[in-house]
Length: 221
Ligand SMILES: [Zn+2]
Image (tube, protein in one colour):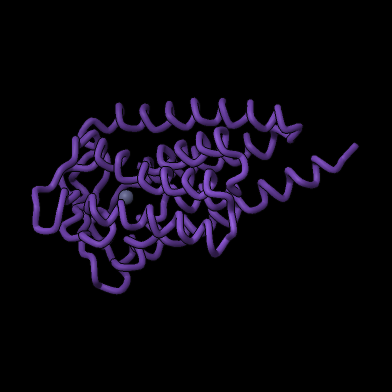
């Protein structure tokens, strides 16, 4: 799941425009940003099996980012940071927390059973990755629906449509490149961690400019 996670961010932006776009975009992948950092640190573990459909990742150990209690803690933490460090209003902070938690729910849909329900508890996942084409269609469908609502909200706020279209185009392009790039046997989880972290951070930085663009446009008579 890649673009599908960002669908939650765009839908939340349509519902609660007071949350800066970058906070929702970073929030949608917050637990994966944590996962990538902990994989680099050697605290969470996984491996790559290029024979697997959908995603080559075998996610053996990720209790601090992808267990249900961890997802709840990350969501509450995001709300507290949004409210007190970023000084956003509570509805915006709660929207960010909901987007952070949506990551776990969407991962539940696609992951093979690797998401712990509680520490040392059963691992769950509905394994949509095993139906790779259906999984891709669900992700692109989610981002298309969310982008439609987001564009409508931007239109109501007198904001330009093209930065939104370009951003969604970027997400879909990254999704397609990742899909077409065959997992090599030589790929390791040690390479996947930094690559994932870089992609998530670059996309969050790009999202900062979406709001900048908005303001410039809003000031134009
Ligand atoms: Zn994830």
